Length: 98
Image (cartoon, rainbow, N blue to C red; front, side):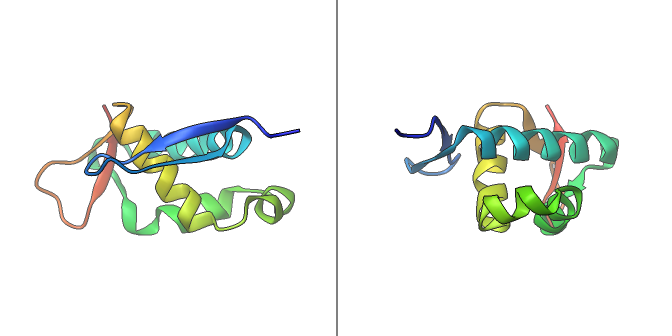
């Protein structure tokens, strides 16, 4: 029996990847919580994977696999879907709610 999957798109390429929906939903919730907590100054992308990792329990971390890869996939999908965006003119990259 196959697991339900969610498509994650990239904003600058035609590439897509499909990850298990439970992973997408867990990571989406954590990313949005962190972005909301950061407010108007934005959440630095550079520490996003570590910040998400710190919020997940051991069981989820063990089942998740590569946190960095999955967080990046979900973050890109959230950008493409218009849920988050990059703060204009800021380097390194910072993320806010759209």
